[in-house]
Image (cartoon, rainbow, N blue to C red; front, top):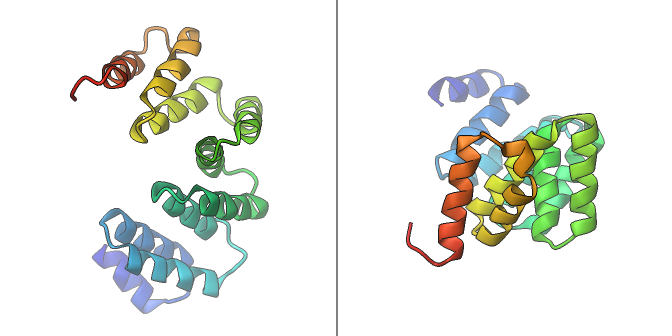
Length: 169
């Protein structure tokens, strides 16, 4: 973090350093500093896609899914080949109850960028992290053939079943 701060101090036009430092602040629980750096990054180059993706992920993680959709779409408008942005957009649509858009992105990612197992693993973990335990079990169960022999997904399913049943952690 200190080295990135120094890089930004030496060259305030270094967008990569600004964005990385913003991520450090956001991950360390200092969102105001992170947002201020993302604002600076947009000022330096409003055409870049990465800063919009970072904003989208920030809004997604804070549960502001409508704002996440807005920024993730702006990111994808600038660079359509961002699987990470599409994964977060897919889940934001899920949480906004826009199942049609969710399914469209699942199908697009599975056909063009990522294998279905990667897409569904991301979905199952995100559902679990947001407390959607029954939905987590459903995604894993519906995709059992893809996850056969995967101990991490078996453990996730087992824990989701426990929590769906109201059992303690």
